[in-house]
Every structure is written in structure tokens, then in C-alpha cells.
Image (cartoon, rainbow, N blue to C red; front, side, top):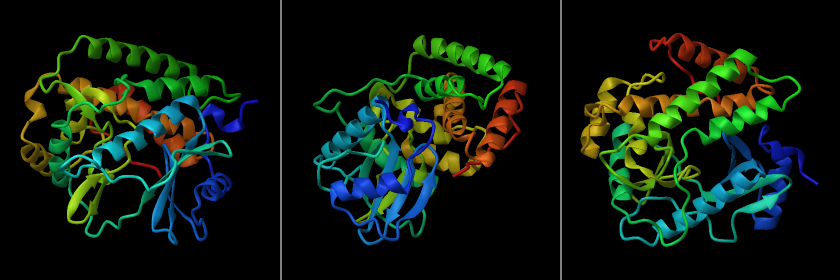
Length: 302
């Protein structure tokens, strides 16, 4: 029998957190929700740890397993890149959730966009891991979210918006398949941004490796391109200079911008029925994409 959470439409809550902590041997007392978007992320103050919860689906199990394997392997390499998970058997499957446990690191002061460059340079010099890795599939999360929404009694998307998104996603995926990438392919983080950095023993390390895979390295430079989140141009320029490659000199950069903006809709499609703010942001984003209004600013809803 499938668990209700198997639709991947609703994020697990405290019941799943407590069940996973019992299995893993962690203390969930006074747990505090930090993020609630693609994952439910809880601070476990008595453990100085973070628990990341996703719905228990085959895709999420594979991603969690890959995430644990990659970060543990990277921890054995000479240069630090990733914050490794807590010791113990992971991921934990409990109460309809896939759960991973990580050390908690305070962000004081918070990292700048330019701080992202050094760990990415180190990552992009790594060989492929000595175990099977998924290959990048453009807009996989968006297509999953669209399928989930179609099965709902009351979909978050209108029929017209869904048709437009499906057509746009197919066009972008076809263009991606025919594109050659100057930096080549290798191990990538898949969601590289300064929000996914923590300081550990003086080094900036990458966290949140759910999207790690083998793919074009340019995908990790998306924080350096102008998009609907309107990162300050000076910050983007410092990041690309520190990395050592200006992706904006490559004519294909707009394809990657389009991919990341469409990809960013997936979490909001899943959350829209249970979170009015996510539903409003989803409508705002789709309207700006369909009208081609690049001046519209998007906001992250946690």
C-alpha cells in the first residue's frame, strides 16, 4: 500500500521527524523548522544538527542516497568541498519521509556570492566519483510537479498554464540536448548558490546536494547570470571573476537562465494547494514568464 506522501505533493512534518530521529538515535526535542520548500528542514538544537525531510518516493530515495554517497566521498578528497553528513546509516526512511541528518553550522557572517567561487572551482576539478551517478535531466522536477498537479482534484494550475509550461519545457529540453557546453561535463552540485554555503574550520563548504549529478559545469554558475531574482550585478560580476570564467560571454547562457527559472516553479506547484503565499508567487512567476516581463522580481517563499 502506498503512503499518502508518495505523491510528493506535501512535505513531511514533525511526526515523520520524530519517527526518523528514533531510528537514527537523534534527539528531536525543541526542533525548529528552518525551511519548507523542496524539503522540510529542521534544526535539532540538542544535537547541533539539521534534519532534511522529503516525501518518500523512489526519486527522493535515489537522490538522498546519492547525496550521502557523494558528500562522504568528497570528504575523503584532499581539498574540502562538501559538509559531510552525520555518521550513521543514512538516509532514514520513516513515516512516509526520506530523512538525512547533517551537522549544523551557524552563518555568521553570512557568505557572499563571491564566496561560492572557490568551492565550485575545487568541485569542478574533481573526477567522476567511483560509483554510479545520475546524469543531469533538464526540468525533471518541473515535469514531476506538473504530473502531481494534474492528478489533484483541484489543480493549482489552469489548463492553459499547464499546456504552456509543458510546451515551453519540451522546447527548452530539446535545445539543451543540442547544445555544446564550453566547460564540459563532470560532477556538479546542481543548486549552487551562496545560501547553500556554510563555514567549517575556516573553509566555505557546499551543502544541500540533492541535485548533484554529472552534467555541464555551467549549470553551477547560474548564480552569475541575470534572472528574475535580480542579484546585484556587482555581486554576480565578483562571483564570475573569482571563479575565473564569465558565462555571460557565452551566447548559450540564456538557455540556462530559462532552465533555472522553469525549474524554480516545481516547488511552488507542489506547495500551492496548502500554502496561499506559494500559490500567489506561482501565479506571479508564470505571468511574468508568459508575458516575457523580465523586469518582474521573484521572491522566495519558505
